[in-house]
Amino acid sequence: MRFKVYKYKLEKAPGYNVLELPVASELLHAGEQGWDFVIWASVLDRETTLKVKHHLLVVATGEPLPDNICQHISTVQSDNGLVWHVFDLHGEPEYES
Picture 1 (cartoon, rainbow, N blue to C red):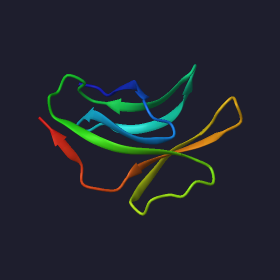
Picture 2: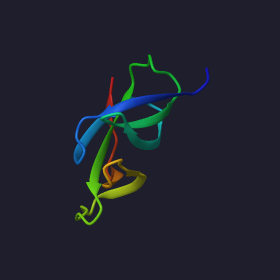
Picture 3: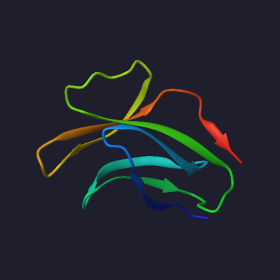
């Protein structure tokens, strides 16, 4: 089976988001598409029942960051001039079966 790239909508920008993806998925990039704030991920098996919850934070430039930042995913420059930053929050993954 090969990896495929899928797009997922983030509901809160700015704010916290929980994105449930299949195990072995990798967050690739975030951006704006139309009026939506989205993130792309490389996914091996979309039909698997074993999922991992990714806790993401979207903040504007100049906003304070929490201490539990693990990884910067992407910086997004909006058409309206605002700049957003997407972070993966540190913590143990939550597995769903």
